[in-house]
Image (tube, rainbow, N blue to C red; front, top):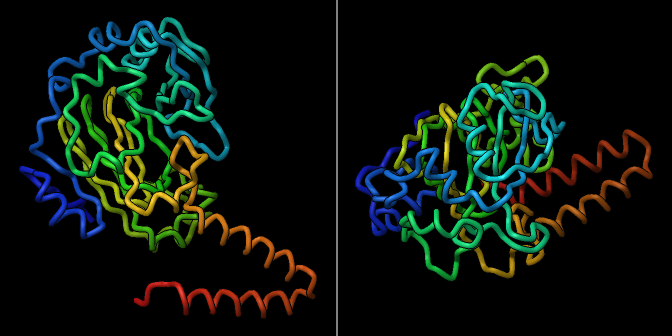
Length: 308
């Protein structure tokens, strides 16, 4: 299925037509500002040269956040940009064809959220942020840079967000929250790395998932509703900014979560209760465990699942 494309996007169009549908959309026609002309490699290097960044480095193009097929390293920002923009490197950590990925962090990652206007103020000044949400709902703006060919793992976020594609193009694949049963989830991440040629002997249920596919080009924005699974492939050296905002009551979010990726507080409580329930059922013989576990699943489905 193709991701919907909306041209000549405005705040009114987004809020009245796109947002209520709760499905992803590629948004075009909004002026993202001087970044679209300025952000070449030399300019990025010059504007961020005084800071160091913590980055992912991998020999593989498909990054695996479950089994960690990458290492964390630190580099001066200008050196990182140089390497990330190259396909072969004179200086490297693992191999001369290694791939790089930056997901910018807060100044103190344990408590500060990512905000490009704080960590990279000169670059932030080049961006016109889309006025699609109220200022008090803003949570974070995450600066992202990746090497050509890098594919990020399939995962979901608990907040609505818009991805501003500024440099390079991306292939994007999304799955609806209702496809969770088919994606072999491990926490908030899918165990299936190769979604284009999956191992259906190992992941047979994946054939039941419906991918939403599209391409982002410089100046495009992608609306990703909360809980929609997404997978990104850098077709070129790429630079983007994610803007996340709280669309639920603030009390439902974990106040100690600077990344904004922990499940809502009620969902965390429910998971803890379920862990206790499973531990209690383990006291029974196998046939009893099976019987009562099925009964619990039946109750949950009848009371909480959408009727389709």
